[in-house]
Image (cartoon, rainbow, N blue to C red; front, side, top):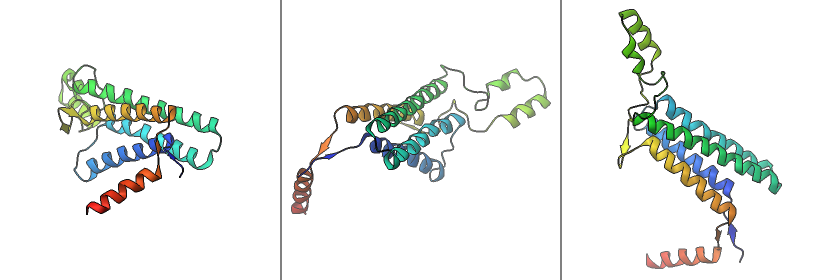
Length: 179
């Protein structure tokens, strides 16, 4: 029997789809509304999905797939940078964009300026995480997730993980015998 190679581009595609699925379930099922930085963090995942789909479907040469793979890794590095910045904004290390925090309200002297500032500023703030799990915000988890995707995909690229159908069939038979 022949071993099956795990394709790094397919791994990145599935990882990006999983991340966006989680983000949209959090938003539309659990009503955790994203700030502008959260929305920026989704864009590299869309780029990875588009590029990996095009590569897996249309590109046939190893060189073209290699270039696509490294472009996907760069998109995920960009996502890591955005997530790192977002965590810094949440921890008050960095100053967030004026569109997602109300720091610009401190400099207001009259009611008309306050009204204008409130109309310009979105309700969802980047410096206050809407969800925290194990003391980490969703931005921090996104950073960890993207870093893990990058490291795993690079390791698959460097030395492909081979899955033997014979081993898979043995594991399936052992589990069915237990039931």
